[in-house]
Amino acid sequence: MKTYKIVELLGDGISAELSESVHRIAQSLPLKLEFIPYDLSEEARDKGGIEIYDEAVRLMNEHGVSMKYPTATTRESPNKVLREKCLFSVIHRPVATIPGIQTNFTKPLDIDVVRVATGGTYDDAGQRIGKDTAVSLRVISRGPCRDAARFAFRLAMMRDTNVCSSSKWTIQRETDGFFEEIAGKVANDYPGIPYRRELFDALLAGIVMHPERYGVIVCPNEYGDFLSDSACGLIGSVGLGDSSSYAFDDEGQITTAMFDPSGGTAPDIAGQGICNPTAALFAMRNMLLHLGERDSAKALRQAVLDSISTGDCTGDIGGSLGCVEFTEIVAKRMEATLQKA
Ligand code: ATP
Image 1: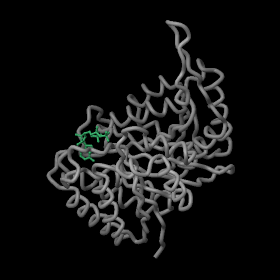
Image 2: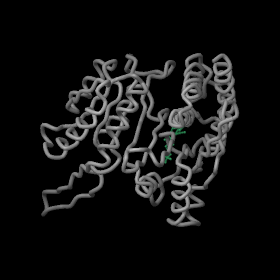
Image 3: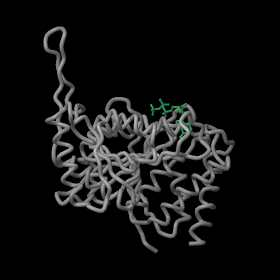
Image 4: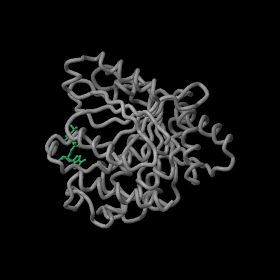
């Protein structure tokens, strides 16, 4: 049986329940996931101080793949620290319709938002000039833009879909113009993948009117941030999504990958056994894809979707199951699919 070592970054609130759910699913996979737990809870961070991240990052870089669960942001933001220390340059947010979830938007959506994880306006807090003006610096760098574009094209190849790069290159001519130049160059290396660019405002309207036209969308940092959450709104939930972060070597190969559910620590329901592990299981599915385990990834996603659409789900989305019961149903459904294959 194929074995993979996965670093598990444990956090706060519902983190332990989400991790249990992931472990239960792992038991039903036709492969072995060997988890290496590392405590990043608030208590551990209080005790260990900022140095606690050094060992986390060492493990993440050594093993290459990690799952991260929600962590409370009290002083520092663990996500921000990890992003900086691991040199993550790309964030991927898959956003797809979940049949059975109530939405205002009724068309099917299935997009992958690939975001340059550094620069844009986010690396500079800016400064006041006099009493009535403030400025900030906007940074677009070749390396992370190229990593993001390459990641987008590889993903589109795997999904058999198109790539759209999006920014405001007609206004931000130097910065967004540079991003589009880099994306366009990468596109030349993938002649088989349909590619176009769209101005970001037009893209937002386009997604709402014709979601079927979009597959993978690659954008600079802040646009990707806005788009990820607004797209989650279209599918009816900001909390059911997952995200992954990647660092690359000079040849554009992924060196370190981290997968995490986008939701928070939900302290109000922690320990009650009622949390929804969907986002954590979607993160696990994306991790399986990254490991090259496509059949398992597909079976897991389908099992989650089928369970939700038939009403076998947790209370937050209209069902009556606890986290453990829901996970058990998903595991059984996934096993049945994998046995048939
Ligand atoms: P944090 O500070 O970590 O973001 P929070 O409670 O402010 O925590 P969320 O964790 O996003 O923010 O929770 C917002 C609401 O959604 C809470 O009422 C919480 O119980 C609910 N919620 C969040 N995640 C889940 C989940 N996985 N399953 C069920 N309900 C959830």
